[in-house]
Amino acid sequence: MISGAQTQTPAVGLSGPNTIITRKTLEPPVTVENLNKYTFNIIPDRDPVPMIDDPAKNVQHIACLAPANNFIDCHTSIRSLCDIQYTCGSGDRPTLCDCALYYGYPEPEAIGDRTFQEACGVKDEL
Image (cartoon, rainbow, N blue to C red):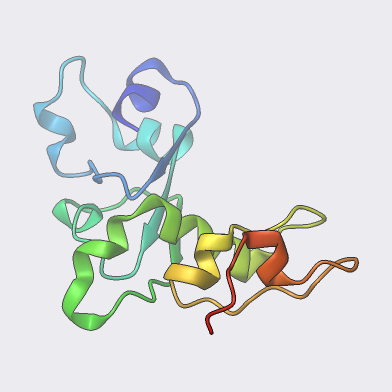
């Protein structure tokens, strides 16, 4: 996001450190106006990295289903992608198998005749 503000190029961050306070220490300098105009940060709940500084104007807060005692897992990009897919949908694209298998999201509804287990290679346990 710093590079986007410095070069006046649209930039998207996922769990990026915010830069409103630290912008005065950067070279070349970054203005609040450029941070607000050119940057967008996706911030998961309880993610410690974006808490380092104050956010610019364009942010999207998302949920984090990591256990309360494992807040550092809120900085995992796959977990964030799972929340975005679960909240916003994935259109006609399949969701990641990992979302249901490892991150606590519900199994997606089947499209066609393949089950979730078949599509994701889940072996039946005897």
